[in-house]
Length: 374
Image 1 (cartoon, rainbow, N blue to C red):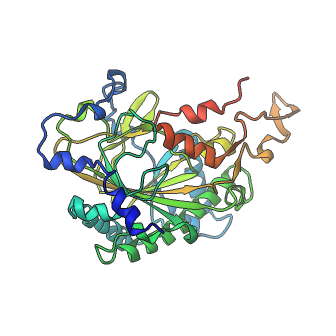
Image 2: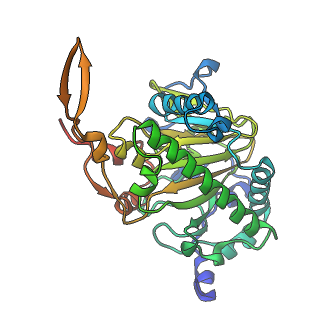
């Protein structure tokens, strides 16, 4: 637990974007300005409704094994993972009332004054819980136009309640309940991913030792020059899978597909799911983590709440050996034995996490650095 002295010290470290907005600035400071080649001007976002990510009704996963309904959902998930890396889910098991409560406590926290939020300020350091604005350790890194509160949630032993706001009064209860439901859902999805890869249902969950979970409540204030900066720069998520809660109708998040940036229109009652880096490695590239970014908005503030399902820090991540074993390939009526080579080197998850938080979002350079050259 952080001491009172530490918390007081940490108040000096938070340089919130919100403060700039309150001052009524008309141009953004240099530390937020992206180099011309990193600005969100190319490739052109696609507004084609046919380019929308799949929306999958998970209700069929509750049906008995081998049922038509269950197999249909599994096929839809396989298609989404192989072709998009992103998909929205409805009838996912998290009550809409709890999703609404989660969004409300996030909004209520960021409606507090900056001084009140400073009571939960993150201490200086790497991957620190609490209220903050600059998540990158590297000096001189370009800042995103974003404030946040970052919480470690699962297992319960990693929680530090000093950083869980007591205002609003139901914040802690709502976050706890949402965390528990999100963990159940993440395990169901990992089970479906495993089955679709031809592996036992509990394979991915066991492979990562134990699911770890953390949450960001992102606050994106209005920006006077959104074309010069980013709400969150292009990146792929570092863990296993992400469950994103957004306000219905939001189009601020864009994903990269076929060299176009596709705005994701948040469906009512839906969560946006994306395959993350560790699944790409374990699946040996059959499923890909996908670059995504958040655009800044000139007029409206925005809240988004991603919950990340990660591997245990000490988990050894590598292509699943079972996917590399000899397999039969029937081509032109000739059956031959084939062995798949690993496309990625072996890593420790914690090292991957440290790299991201040291240097920040940078497309997919981290995963690409693990690829084995043919």
